[in-house]
Length: 226
Image (cartoon, rainbow, N blue to C red; front, side, top):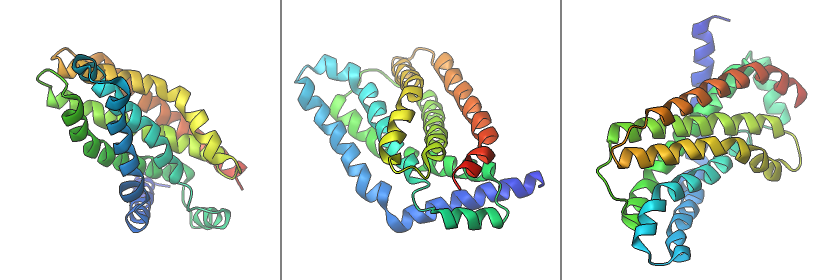
């Protein structure tokens, strides 16, 4: 397969997953309100300590995004039954292209959720400082990309299992801890005008590692789920 054909397949899977989401509306119309509610309830649990709320705002935002992101990523294979996966294989779909396409679709959905929740976090928690918007944009893109890749990898591992809904988050949360650490600390640094380069580089390294692992394991995992 040529490089151009490979990336065309990636684009096809990416567009297919987004079309499924637009038609079903599971993420934006059903799950996002629950994520916003979780962000809203956190100040009630911590009380009226304004200084505390300002400190924990970015961390709470990314915690909600990560927990919600596992649900979004596990959704990516939910509509693909065994016969559908067989049909995709017979059509010549490269498993690695399918993995990357689903990961990008999940990342875009998570980016949309983050953009919806960020203004709510600013209103509720009022973090202090003059943020570096460039750093925040890069951290957000790198963070949601890592979550999309991680979620798609875990989703492929639990595909076909009866307990996939319970096992998926349990497998995904531990490796998501470095993403939570990097995005939270990086956001704090960007808001306080400190350098966020080290945290951004950590996210980039995680993305590269997840891409390599996902592409290498895509074929074997596809065979084991048949």
